[in-house]
Amino acid sequence: MKKLNIFLSFLFFLIALNTVVYAQEQFKHEKRFYRAPDGKLYVNKAKPIYFFISDSPNPSAEHHLLSPEESTKKYANPMYFDTEGWNTLRSPSCVDTVTRKVVQPEQDVKFVVFSDSKAPHTKLTLNHAPTYKANDVLFVGKGLSVSLSSTDETAGVEKVFFSSNGAQFSEYSKPIDVTSENDYVFKFYAADNVGNAEETNEEKITLDITAPLTQFRIEGDQFQDVLSARTVIHLTASDLKSGVDKIYYAFDDNQPRVLVNYISLSSLSEGNHTLKFYSIDNVKNQEEVKTYSFFLDQSAPIVIDEVLGNQFVSNGKAYSSGRTKFKLTAVDNKAGVKSIHYSIDGAEYVIYDAPFYLPTKTGATDIKYYATDNVNNKISTSKGSSKSTATYVDLTGPNLSHSYSTPQFTTRDTTFINSSTKITLKAVDAEAGVDKITYTVDKKVETDFTAPFSVAEEGQHSINFTGYDYVENTNSENFFFIVDNTPPSLYPRFSITPIGKKAYGDKNMEVFSPHVQLYLSATDTQVGVSKIFYSINGGAERAYVGPIGDFSKGKEYVVKVKIIDYLGNQKDEIVNFATGN
Image 1 (spheres, rainbow, N blue to C red):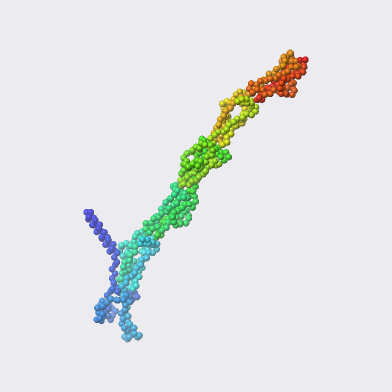
Image 2 (tube, rainbow, N blue to C red):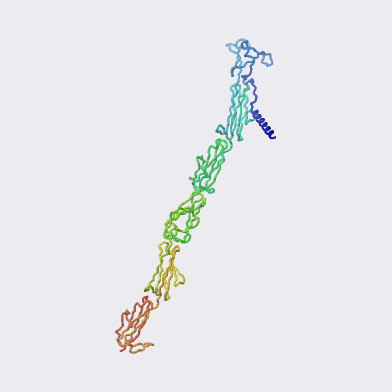
């Protein structure tokens, strides 16, 4: 069964092949005579010729076959014309048909027959369509109309015949439109009016009415439809028949230009753009315009640095503590941030992924950083000590000290003050600067130091105080002192014993002999007596330097005494006495 199927298939193939061959065979063209409209007689040169004579033009009239002389008999009946074109039969003299006399001047009677053995020449023309030949293949574009023109030297063209792709020859009458894309084999020929047919001509063409296909490829920085100025676009086109002639492209509303190599984006401004492109093949088929819209991103991300924790800016310099973290944040206008990189003090750049501590050293820290977006735009910024918001690391707190206003008195390791003495707390910080001072008196409520203060309560006290700089580095100190608000005590003494008493108000006044001397002494429990002053009976005040004497007889005395210790604590006392006669 399988062998039978193979045989039948082969048989059908032979039948089909024979049909194609037969269909393309020329028609049979009989070699004949042809009387042209102008009366000229044409005969195919291959046609045998016989000459008859008759006394009537009527074809049915009596007529006789002429025979040549014996010497040329073998070349006649039939005879063949030896000359292409013009052939003549002659009689020596023309005879007037009325008078039957020879016409003067004498001239031959000529019978002309045109012999024709040459076939016409036919030309095929491809109209209204571009053509392109490559590798012996003729490609033709849209609008093709095939026309045939034929010429014949003698009898003239009778008919022109045409066949396409193996079809039966048919008479050509008008141009033939060819619209279906295919490979074509056109065969054609012409026959003249006496049956001469030319050899079959053949023209092979490939009708190409399909435009090329253009594709684009992006090389370089790309994130979705966001590109950088460093990106290039490659356009490639393919065409299955005549091949690509040119690729055209344009940006936005600009005029198209021919692609030479690749498309650079470096001359475009930042923003939205549309690439338009198409190709034309070698027979002028033009592809429909394609577009690719994209955003050209030339802006690098903006990096914002932020200090997390202690920071203070003074005179353009930023200070931070060892507890401070440095945070970097980047924002991008289009493609989005890809990564942030930073370097500390000239070290290699590392990728930023979280806030980081500043180095644990005092002094300026140089932080450099940049951010890259998803199309690799980047910007580099150097943050030095004069610009950075957190690049001077301050690890030490303020230097602390304290002082007292007057009065104050120090003996050995103890300082004595009184309730009017002002205590001043001081802090100095050469780096970030002093933010505040807090203190406690005797470890009680903590208070911010804003102005010198005093302690009223007598006795020993301690001060604990802490200085804060602007990045919250601290130092603490304490000191103690004794508040002494108690003045000295007076102890008057007389050089002799009294000789009596005398009423003095509601009290008794002692009476002494006039040569008596008054001694003044005082004691102080804390700092000691500094000065003693006195005045007698409202007189001028004097400093006490020794015994007071030279009293008058029979007189009352009021001695006002002022005692001052080394803190200025003062006590006023009065000594009353009288002298006898």
